[in-house]
Image 1 (cartoon, rainbow, N blue to C red):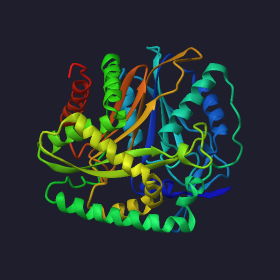
Image 2: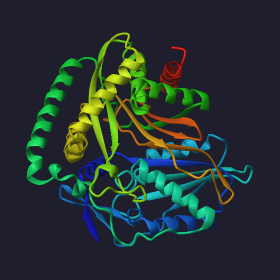
Image 3: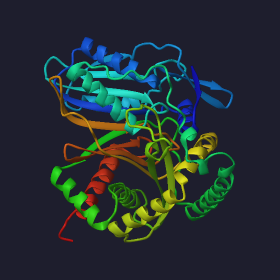
Image 4: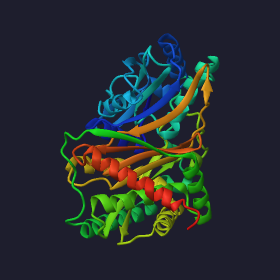
Length: 428
């Protein structure tokens, strides 16, 4: 069985052909799953989801999913030398490409030791087969296997459809042409304007030898609850507040507080907008990346900036640009990869909302959840995956070691968290 990749899936495939480009999920557990039981659970989840049995196939300039038999999900065991041992495993997974031509496009690492009851499960996926929603779905189904062993409904051999095949009618066929032409004209104008305004200021791509480093942080329960209340009062989504904090942190630590144009992203899950919609039980990459530029002035105020970000994203969504970005993303990524002279952006925050995971499954307690995506030399200067779990806001920052050292990365992350805690202060 074969199925051609969609626009954003192709962008992920092209990126993975040039750099390691993996989506990594971590389950931090109270308890140690037996390796044989874990293998059984992985096999059940793999049978349930076709893309966990697929490989990528390139035909000229096009990519296809191929479903013609797959090996079991590879499982590796790593000795747990301490509570932070999983972080080194995640960095290794972020920097090690998954061979696209061989199925499956997923692997698993169990970090455990006989000396402690705690353990970690690290799942790595080629980004073309999962997005944040799908990664959480796989984790949930894996935990359900430990809870009751029920395999769930079999998905059979059907590959999920391309997102483009379910776009609303006005974003397909002839009706799409004038919308796409107007969108491309705006993109070109925005790109030229950004290049002009950022000349001599923007950070160049680091050396090709740059490696991803992971920096996990979290807000406590009280600051998280206060931040959510302030977002509701300000009528600003949490995603816009996170982008504001990261942009202000970059302006201070990377650009010495100077007025500077910075690029940020909104990551849109297309599932609810497709016709018919695609449910969260479907493992696929139903994602698009929207890129924006903001001119940050000196002394920017947090909530004003967050509101500007929200308005910019909202206007773009109303124009349907989530679909247009998806359709054009492969060409844009190929151009950036080919020339390699400019970065894709400054800050990238993927906020996935509250995680729907069981807190206990078959004697295994879920203590924490982490996630990260491989960055690359043409990628953003500082990236983060964020989610709500157990009443806390969990952040996993990724930076490139040729861009900044660990001390600089920690200072930037601490600044971002400080800004969020200050913004959450309800006395203001």
